Length: 412
Image (cartoon, rainbow, N blue to C red; front, side, top):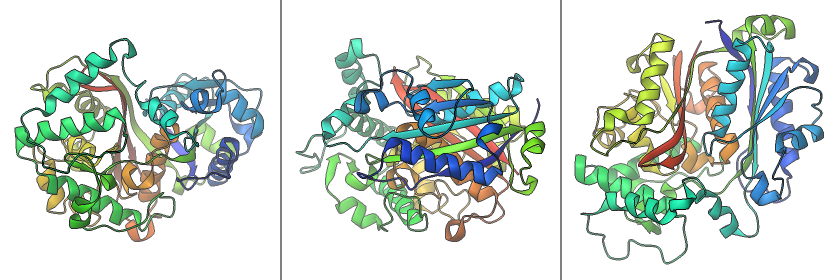
């Protein structure tokens, strides 16, 4: 297949930005990506826009990409609006790659932007409860939380404040992993502490406060075994990537030394499987497909960014990507395998639980971190000698797993 490259990529600082508009953040990300690629707006042949909260939170139910682009200086080119739950930004990148391979253009823009922090917090929380079949919502919930049965909840381990139903589902997945493989709450807390400590060195991260494992365990509970620092926060932010063919790189005059090749771009959807069939997990199947396309394996990866809307997500996805043996993700995390300087650093950005999770921008933000790592520009969080990187980004729920998963492999 024709080589495809990230020529330029940028993101805003993720966080709570009450004084910034959606368009303001999108403009910052776009201008940063264009400058990084040495490109102009007139070079862009197609736009893939991921902004899934624009309808519910800003009332822009249709053409959000066209509206945003009209305010940041892009017009006259195809603009596609992408919705794939939390995997929307990564899906925008995947569609840009397909557009380039199809010859529709030689330079494409993937742009994700969200304004999620609004006065009515419950309105934002309700977004997450649309990420499954809403016609069977109660049945879905009952099926998923049943996974956690058989674990006695310690006294005082349940929050008396409202939280997303998805956190109860993540907790049930934690409990299933605990009773099936022996994973401990301390191991989950080790992932969380590691990511918060990584985030100290990331200027784009929403939270930059270090935590010890003991501090994570002692933090306010959400629902056992999840405590507050283990959860991704509500976040505003934007991220953008200029993606090119080799002809596009030459046309815009991009610096070839700073271009990163997209060695594989895979989107897969759910499998209606049983929990006792982890080999059929959508993320595992997507990773196998990506490795085959790239001609690489998990042993070749030097750094990873995975979807950790809760800290348990990193353990599960490390196993799905083959970066840890099945059932041993917690053990690997606790002994430091996933820490910068360890065997396979995961989420050097701080992950979603520290960096933040502005849904449509999340996947592009992950790719920003991996591109920065492969360029050797990550400063104190740099993974030395990184040449191959893998990203996993999931969205929604069908059955017992993600409705959509994106896996990208990047190479220098």
